[in-house]
Amino acid sequence: MGEGGPHDAEARADRWTVAVRRRIALGDAWHRLVGSIPAVLQVSVTAIAAYAFAHYVLGHAVPLLAVTVTISSLGFVRDARPIRVLETAVGMSVGIALAEVLLLGFGQGTWQLAIALVLTLLVARFLSPAASFAIAAAVQSVLVMLLPVPDGGPFVRTLDGLIGGVFALIATALIPRDPRRGARRDGQRLIDEHVRTLASLVAALRLGDVEEADRALARARATQPALESWRATLDSGLAIARISPFLRGAVFDLDRQRTMLSGMDLATRNLRVIARRIDYVSRDGAARPVLADLLARVSVALGVLSQSIGDVAQQPVARQSLLEIAKHLDPVAMLPDSSVSEQALVLVVRPYLVDLLTATGVSTSDAQAALPSV
Image: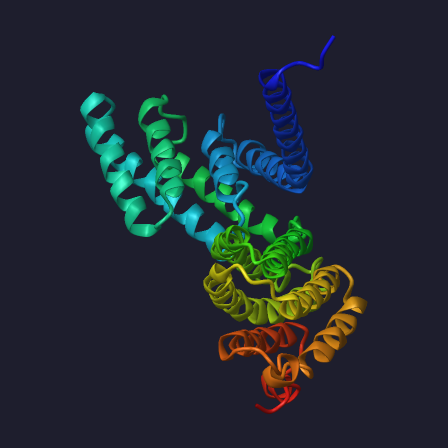
């Protein structure tokens, strides 16, 4: 029997596509699960500690809000800086206190619940730009308005909320989430996006393929989320490492990554310039193997730079590789018989190399000095 017609081939391709997507989804789910274990432990231990203190030490029968405020203040957010935890805890405690005041003055009921909900949402939106924060504060307010008033008089639940906030703050210092792993992952993700973009640009230059150049430009324009994720993780990690006695050793590594981020931020902008320029010149369909080789060498050096985020010993290797490339970036020497537009491509690569060198720890002046005069 034959192997089947084109419809069978399409069906097999569709099945393979579904299978690959399923494996990718399962892989992402597994990495997300493993990566969340430190946060799960931190939130669980802190919530139980806040409950135990309010219940066994202060004698509160059901300190529900001590637990809910703790969980909401810590959460699974990327930004786990103490100031963010404090803002969340204070805002939620204000919402609880506001509901307690309304409950004390007007009692429970449907219209009282509506007023408490509206006021809490307005106050929360004033205190924080995060939409999730307003929802969390509103949930606390609703709990106050709907649950029976506990023994102990007014504002017992406000005290529970403050206890939850205090325990959440203590946890950021005494049970911190090690920020180095997340920062390394985010940094490598950004640099790997550069590598993949350069690979597309190399293919476009070798083949004169404008469609490949279009894909490279689209990828270069999509790098901003990876850049912002790395910045947020580093800002949060440094804030935690500087107050936690258990993470003092992480400060050096995070500071080194922040220096790298500064260079990669500028390099990302220049990568878009390079991609736009190559996308434009590729429309003539001509192959440009010399320029393709240049970007291929830069891509290899970037691969080493990506490894250096987790292994500092690779940083000088990446630096030396980039310095070797930089000293040959003379457009006339590289492309003596080419047009001005092709030589201009070498010129737009020069600031990109300067930025990559600063990411390895070279000063801007030294990086510029490494380039040949033009």
